[in-house]
Each structure stands twice: as C-alpha cells, then as structure tokens.
Length: 168
Image (cartoon, rainbow, N blue to C red):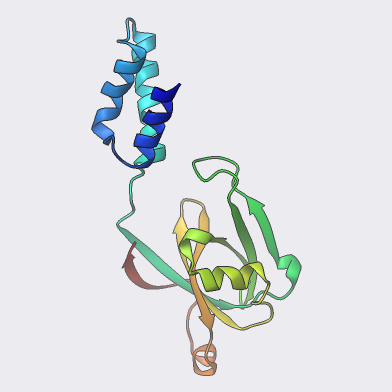
C-alpha cells in the first residue's frame, strides 16, 4: 500500500516525468501479455498524463463585453462534475447587455482572489462592468472584470471585440 501512495505522491510533486509513467506502471503491474492488456496500459498512461501533465494553452484571444448582472438569480453556483477539478465550485453569470443576455462562467483559477470574492458575495450586482472573457471549447470564461467608465460605456465598442492576445 505504501508503494502506491508513493507513486501518487511522486505524480503530485512532479518527481515522475511524463515519459517515465508507462515504465513505472509496467514495473508495478507487469509487462502486458496481449493486445488488450497493451491497450489498457496505454489508456491508463494517457489518463494519468491528462490529469497530471495537462497541455498548457500558450495564447488565448480575450474578448470584452459591457453589461451588468441585474439580479441575484442571474448568478448560479455550480460544481464541476468531472475531471481533476471535480467538485470545485464555479459560477455561471447571466449578463444583461445591448444584445440581450450573455452567459459567462467564472472559475477561481482565472480570477484574482478579490474579484472571486466579489462574485461569491454578490457584490457585482447592478454595476455597469466590462467583462473580459476567453472562449474555451463551448464555454466563455471570465478572466477579468472592472467598472465601465462613462466614456467607455458611451463609446462605440462592439461586444465580443477581440482586444488582444495574452499568454497564460
């Protein structure tokens, strides 16, 4: 039992590299003897790699949206259902803007602690804000928000305008 916990600890602390996982599993489980076992070893290796050695996105396009969260029911608290961050809380915000309502998601790892707390405490209600967000597969994730200045709110800024490329 101690050897297994050591393996997981080594993964968590990055003492085992991505390239060493398969050989480490062969040492612990034995060499596969048929195609089914070989496929299973590859699947286990790929699954461990996806959890502990996720590919970092180098560049992300950031968009902006001017709007406000009007009511407390427009902020919905949810839990992640799968993946390595399973059970983690995130929020879905329904933002009223010129074009109607837009849904953006807020994840703790994407926001500064003070801004995360503002969402948790509903401190952003009825404030005209600029939301910066990135598109991730099918979700729109908030990376920042700040008060819209009166000049900016009156300016002809197109919603979802591509502002810049950022490195994460």
